[in-house]
Image 1 (cartoon, helix red, strand yellow):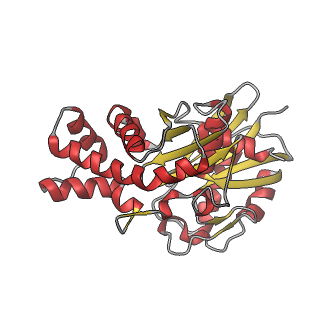
Image 2 (cartoon, one colour):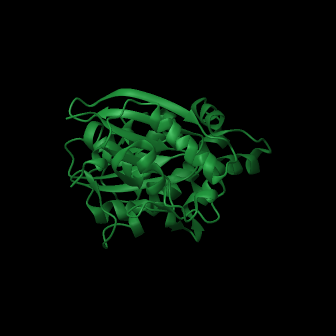
Image 3 (tube, rainbow, N blue to C red):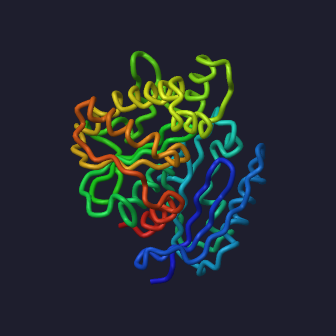
Length: 288
C-alpha cells in the first residue's frame, strides 16, 4: 500500500505528511506556517502549498485533521465567531482542495479525534478496547475511542464526545482548565502574569501557590470528566497536548483526580505526542 497523504491543520501551522500505517512511520513531513490573520484565499492557499510539499500520489485518498466547529462529513467550515478561521465559515474546503491536490477523496476529522485514533493505532492506546484521550492546551480536547474509532453519540459519551462542553461548580470546564485559566488563576493569586511552562516550573520547585493552581484546575477537570470515563467503561486515559509536556507535574495530579472521582483508570502520557494526529488522519482516510 502506498503511503497515505495527510494534513494536520493547527492554529499556527499546517503539517503535511506521508504516513506508512503498516510500518508505523512518517516517511515525509513538512510544515507551513499560518499567518495570524488571513482571508479565505490565503488560508486555502497555505493548505494547498502544504499538501503540494509532499510527494503524494495522484488520485490518493487524503486525511485532513482540522479543529472544529466543522461539518466533517461534508467538508464545510462552520467557523462563525472563531477568529482564526472565520474566513472559512461556510466554505466547502473539500471542493477547494480535491482538484488542487489531485486527490481522489478527502476525509476530514476533528483534530482531537485524529490524536486519539493515532494513539490507538500507534501509541499508548494500542491493545485497549475503550480509551478516553485528552489534549490539554489552549482548551481541553477529547475523544472517546472504542476499538480504534471515536464514539460520537449515545448516552456513554458527552455530546460529540467533547468534554469542553462540560461544567464544574457552575463554570465551563475550560474556565477551570486551559492555558488562559491557569495563567489567570496564578495572576489573581500573585499579580504575576506567567505562562503555563513557568507555572509548571514553580510547582516542580515546590512553590505552594503554583502547586495549588495546578491542583485546583486538574481536580475540577477530573471531577467533571470522571463520571463519563466510568460510564464509557474506559480502562485507560491518554493525555497529550502542550500542557502534557509538563507530565511530572500534570500526571500525578490527574491520576489522583480521577481516583477521587471514583474513575478506576490508568492515566498515561501520549506516546506519539508529535505525530499521533498524523497517524489518526491516515487511518481515517482509508477507514471503511
